[in-house]
Length: 436
Ligand code: PGA
Ligand code: ZN
Image 1 (cartoon, helix red, strand yellow):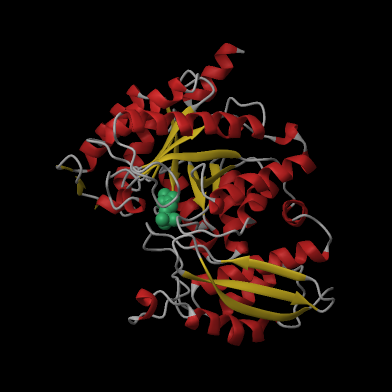
Image 2 (cartoon, protein in one colour):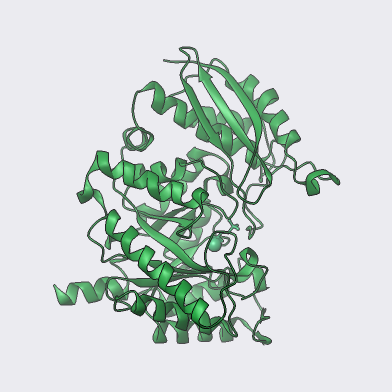
């Protein structure tokens, strides 16, 4: 075994200019593992809590208390432990914090340490991280299918539109390179259309175009137009993916689309989204109802679960027990896996594997506040058969993740791209079957 010799946190800064936690784990042989905590803006109420200092300085966002968790109790509990035993390491971290949402240590502290340990173990085994993940968890590595944001909305764009993410997926691409090429064409076609309409106003938090639209549906229409302008037939190689992030504009009984000055109950929201599923080539939809709207999610899944991927993000908060519960209840058919929502690698991998065991989709995801950390590119590849959501097709904290996948592709080979596999259970998969 190789023992952990030191665990050290430092304050670094994220893509929104906020402080965040970076951790260096150094082993007895001098090998280093390093990772940085990301930060969400549209957070589920049941996800691990980022410990922030509060007060006036740095708008209350400083992380000195989280760093104290890393450099104090966490370092103390981990020094001397076998770096290769991720489950034990994570259990030792959990044993320090009895609170359900990791509020005493801080989820930002635990996630950075847990990921840094994973990196150190991979480096110690002289393996790329994705390979270490596949070896460690006994999974078949494959490059994920990206979900890439074209327009950012909701909490990532000052609530300019209500819907949070207007994205594309390219399940019809032959390899990861082709996904990047087609996405680039669509992204810039969308920008051209915004400019032509006199609506070019920069970008949102994750680098998608700032959504100057009169209605949420106009964003969808513009996205279809952009796919066409890029020379693609919507619904053929390229499909649409939405993150409604409905918890941001309502809960079970009452939703309010501020842009359109419309209030609606759960049934009306479900009907509206169902109308969109009929009218647009949407293959995946995330958090279509609020995180507390269990009846709504079950109803949405009953009506549309056989034709679209329905992802629980705020609804499932990267929690394996919630995935099992939802599957039993007939809510959702896919889960978003955000490592900092769970707070440790072990809990995140458990969630991913629980979803896959049920035949669900599993989408490893970044947060809207990100950094140069590329752990999730490796995690999604190593666990295999999945999808990857990291925001748009600009800005280095996003591109660094896509570019890392291209480097991994050089090792793994183009054939390892899973492409349409995750969407085989949707109308898109059925259509591919018919045409082949
Ligand atoms: P967040 O949102 O990172 O701002 O919480 C991302 C998402 O809802 O998928
Ligand atoms: Zn989401």
